[in-house]
Image (cartoon, rainbow, N blue to C red; front, side):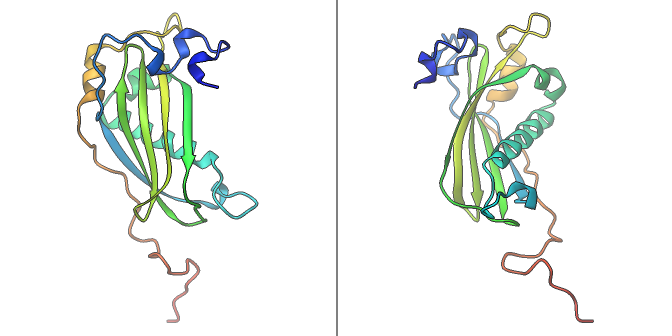
Length: 181
């Protein structure tokens, strides 16, 4: 079912594509990359990563993006998720290093659409989108993005990535390798 036709979803929480928009779409807004390792708690009984890890990595990237822009305290508690879609392309295993790439795809009147890619060694493992709506702090109703925040989000620039320490074993090196000295 197309989410735009779902009558159980209030109009104000429909994705950006259903929203009347006075602003032109910005196809390549701010972006950030956050690197994480697939932890044991990210795996399921099959030994592969659990899809729920994608949401944690996405939220970590979103929080860091907003923090680096200096707007996290102003809006993070006001953003509600209204639509998420993910396609899973490749399996990940415990201890794999993943890069979560998050980009502002579009800032509409009251919503923001993020584009997501999770990669492992330059191979796309997950691709997707998430739409959030900005709420008025008093009424808890959708509210238009203030121009200043819109400009921060729409600027076509990558922010500095957050990467893992180089102290971890390299790919292919057993993590339980012990020194013989």
